[in-house]
Every structure is written in structure tokens, then in C-alpha cells.
Image 1 (cartoon, rainbow, N blue to C red):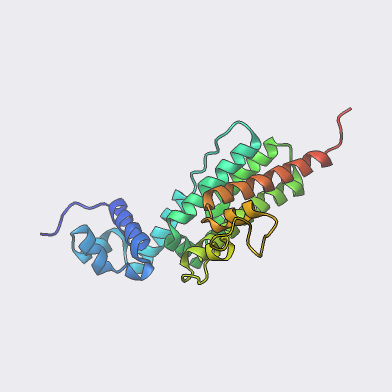
Image 2 (cartoon, one colour; image 1 turned 135 degrees about the vertical axis):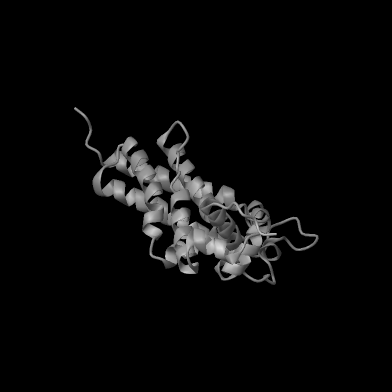
Length: 222
């Protein structure tokens, strides 16, 4: 029996869930109606046709990405928190982000994160072009890291794997031919990478360098 009470918010939530799980191609009006236990005509009543539904879904995603609230006591820690939030949000909804991009709303989607970063680099004393460069450098680092991360996750199994290339030969107490004088490095590279730790390490190093350069360029107070 088809349900009679339905809201636009429920339709969009179910549509977003479908896209998250199966990609945009899985979002048909018939399948969405089945997910909601209602008639297709009810879906049309609330959101219009499929293109209107996609537009509404993209707008909802842009709005959801708008909630960026930095945390931490220092500018570096607060910028790191923005980077971490943005990476998490992008990772959680790759298909929806792709839809936003296809409809030309990527820059609008990133605006709240940029505004949060602007506030923090201003608090750290950067102004003008240096502040703009810092904001964009952090944003590019986040997106670039995420692209590399996804590429590694989606790539076919490698043979030999990184762990095979760096693991010391059986019965050997030393390093590998690639690092004969640094066995600790070889052991570390033979272990699986920790993306979260590497992400924070790289963003922290970038932010510290950017803020230090900004501080060095400011004229000394008299």
C-alpha cells in the first residue's frame, strides 16, 4: 500500500541516500518511489521531474557543505580543523560532489570553507594577496590529497605491492637494496600508509610555513 504522507525533505533525503550508495545513474523516479513506498506521481508532486530533482539535490548538497565550524586554540589548529572537516565532507559524498561539479556549482560549494579559512588567516595576521595565497594553497592541498587518496583506493591490486618492495629479504636483519643504510625507513614504508595521519602532517607543515612566511614579511613594530 502506498504511503500517503510524504514531504519534500524526505524525498531529497532518500534521493541523496540512493546516489551515495549507487551513484547518480541509480536515481530513477521509479526506484526512488519504491524506496519511499509511494507512487511515482507523488514524487513528481513534491520535486517535479528528474532534472528538477537533481537540481534540488545539488542545492541541498551545497547547503550541507556550508556548515564549517573551526575548532582549536591556535590559528594552525583551527585551519587544520577546517581542512579535516572539508576532507571528511568530500569523502562522505563523492557522487553528490560530482553532481555539484557537473552543474557548475563547485566554487559556490567551497565558499563557506574559504570564508572560514579567510577568517583564520586574518586572525594569524595575513592580509591581502598573502592571505589569498594561503587560503588557496590549503584548499588545493586538501583537494589534491583527496584525489591521490581516492586513486590509491580505486587502483587495482599491485604486484609487487609497496610492502613487498620495501620489506627486507627473508632472514635479513638489514635494510633493503633501496635503503641499505636506513632500515627503519624501509620498515615504515613496508607498512600500510595512514592517510589521516599523512593528511594532517602535510596540511600542518603547509600551514605553519605559510603563516611563518607571512609573519616574516610583516614590518617590525616600532
